Length: 140
Image (cartoon, rainbow, N blue to C red):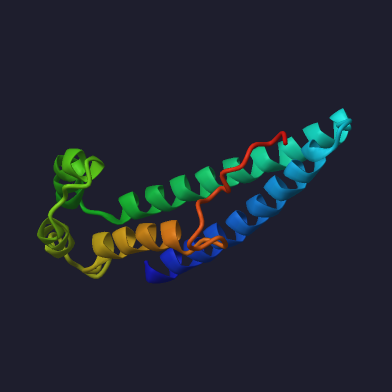
């Protein structure tokens, strides 16, 4: 499971770098007094493709993790979803889900590992310390 999360984290970072490059190219095109419409739309397609790939990669990881959880872990996780959405989840609850239903197929630390990976992907961006994507208008 950790290798799955590590692979996904690396992929997220690569995709974010590609998206950043596409956004910068689009921004440069839009700065011109007369914009080449076909070039701008082509670059916009690259930006949208990059965003789609990032969302798809997140969904792939979520599905793989969910499929590794026992029914008991999924039920507990579902009951914690509302507080988690409000950023009020107690870290001890994550540990409780982690410890439930441990066996050879579902190692301890699964939920905590996923939670840690999600937080790493939010902060380990190519623009660490800056808002991502960059907050700037497409048109000067």
